[in-house]
Amino acid sequence: MTSMPPDERIGSHIKRAEQALVAAKNAALKPAGVTVAQYAALLWLAEKPGISAAALARLCGVTPPTMNTVLKNLQERGLIERSPHEWHRNVLETRLTVEGRAVMEIADAAAVRVERALAAAFGDEERELLVSLLGRAAEVLDAQR
Image 1 (tube, one colour):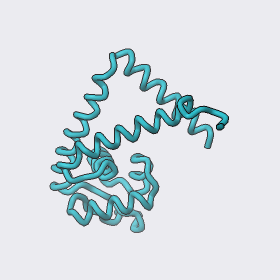
Image 2 (image 1 turned 120 degrees about the horizontal axis):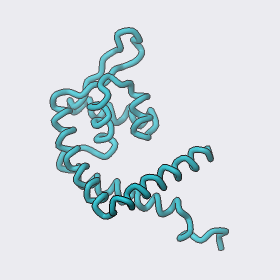
Image 3 (image 1 turned 135 degrees about the vertical axis):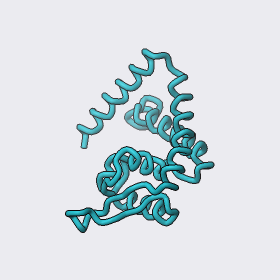
Image 4 (image 1 turned 135 degrees about the horizontal axis):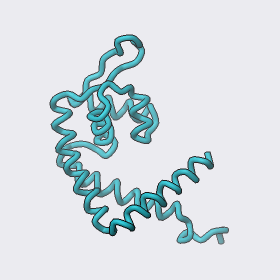
């Protein structure tokens, strides 16, 4: 017997919800031909053109080596372009191509449908409470590191 029953572990419930969200987004993004990680990178690149791979990895919640793989795949598909920074030649700036922006817009419309369906399952106060509780959970867990 464990010291804490599995159904009492909040982390298990958070993980289940995260897995369901990722699965729903993967299904929604399939017609756009991108994964959730690729979509996240495209979305942040639309918001922050020229961002470095390391900064993009932090925003997307993945490791730098994982982000480098994501960016390599996107670059091979012609969805992004990378060029040396004007002053810091060892830093590559990453930007969407025209095709990358088009794919991001298609993928974003699909992801927004998933987000709206999720939001619709809660009333306004419930959504605010859920966001607040998840934020508090993240703060507690960040402090555990």
